[in-house]
Image (tube, rainbow, N blue to C red; front, side, top):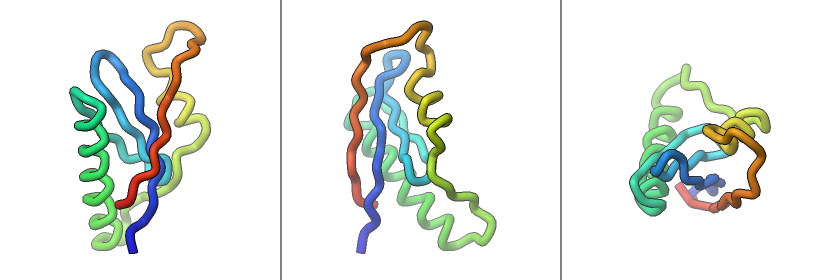
Length: 89
């Protein structure tokens, strides 16, 4: 059975960045699709590391960390929209 993960997608500095809310893993790409694909690959690698190693830290993203991710490079309040995606890893 595959695990369901939630990701936030945003554009930052001309690139697309994705953040997995369940474990804090990040993906980046020139396009939205590339960033999502890279996040899926990173989550799969992270899952393997968690299973293979005893000392891999894994925790959900805190509200403070999510706020930092969403407001990075923002000088003033914005009405920017963000996408939440559900993906299976």
